[in-house]
Length: 186
Image (cartoon, rainbow, N blue to C red; front, side):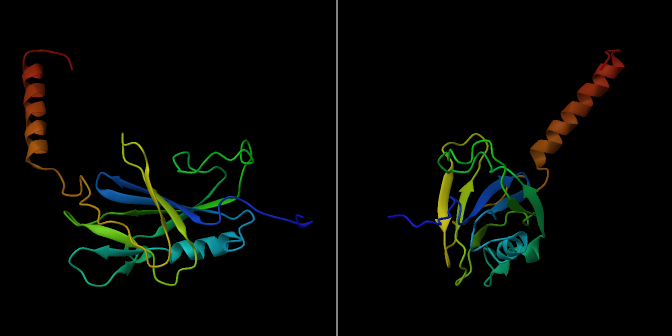
């Protein structure tokens, strides 16, 4: 027989969307504060997000807290990220939710490889998925205390403009000059 008073919801862990963008790494971590006994309010969610990851950098021994490399910016949201690898939940359809999202953007050094790690003893689990332009299906994994991601990077575009960019820029400038000289309107 079911208890008379029961409460539950579907997201009792953090959701972390990882993107490797041109020149930077972006992670959006979302907490559902609606009925989550581990993260019952914004303050608890923000505290958990701040301690969530450490960043390991190839060639360096010690990991560093991620918020020491770049600040977390917190936002209030009412809808889950559509790319989250979660099954549809009919109880969520059309309803707004109390979500807090921490946005972290970090610019690694040119050619730098890195990994994210959950510190040992961290009580909050995280579902992390990686969103890559044009890639399908979405790669995801559940991270618990002591887990780490694979080594990632270097981030495309972090190395600056290469020779190809300079050559292309030069060709465009020469073409523009040629067109102006011949009286072609641009």
